[in-house]
Length: 343
Image (cartoon, rainbow, N blue to C red; front, side, top):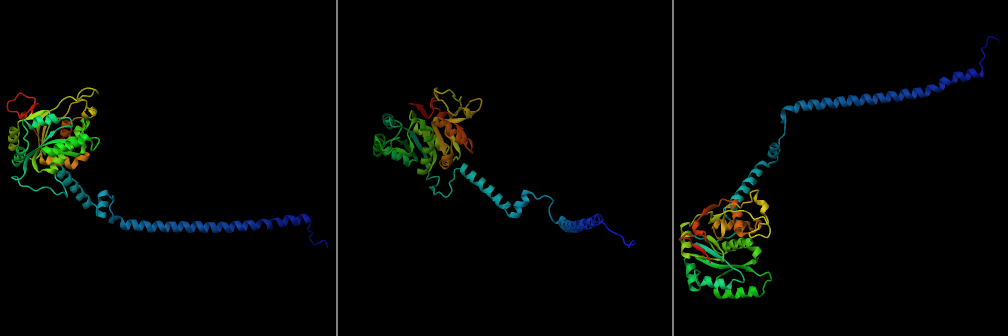
């Protein structure tokens, strides 16, 4: 019995420990193999994808432009030609407006012989009844003489707007006088007031060019007398001259101090020198037909200043107007052959 080995309880505990720790090791090894296989597979797949993409890029490198410009994109989309046509159409429209043409608007068609020479608008107000009667008895024809003058191609009308209180006694008196004398042009959309005088110019030229087909449209203040035959001779000499902006041209200082005569609220728009641009004096302004049409077409967007002569001058600056400075239209001058004088 001495040859048989004996094992104690402590020896059995020592030998069983390696058997218990070997199971986690086997699991860890298994998962490590799985993870390695997964990572290796992904790396192989990514490498394969990069190889495919690289081959595709090399294959198509010579078939695409290096830089795709905006023009190339527009050409692909078919927009390049459309963009050019839009620009050309805008240029044509701007030119047509500057020349006074209306699109889709029926205009009177008249030959040079059938067109009136001039429409003369004499500004007046609600309190100027005595002045109107004085003009009718002096340089302005009335009754049959007025109609005969129209047969010669010259229309003369007193120009007035409507009262702020539509239909009141002021409006009724003008309607009654107009019905009797037949020599008024009533601006239905204009409110007659001193502060609205610059807007009156827009309404007058727009309404006159819509109502009469004439070579010229003449604005006259109600404080001057006209040599009517002298004016007719001056206009006959200029007949068929498009783009004519005629008057006694002037410029001057812009009054920036509120409360002074001729104060200009928008004085800061005229630069550091505070000087008005060249424009025809307000007593007598003459526009050819296409310039009056330009005002009619663009009246909604034309800026007005404190004075009507400056306003009209500003409208002429952006178009192809021919400035004609005629000293005979300077009503305060001492020339013997002037066609207007202060009343």
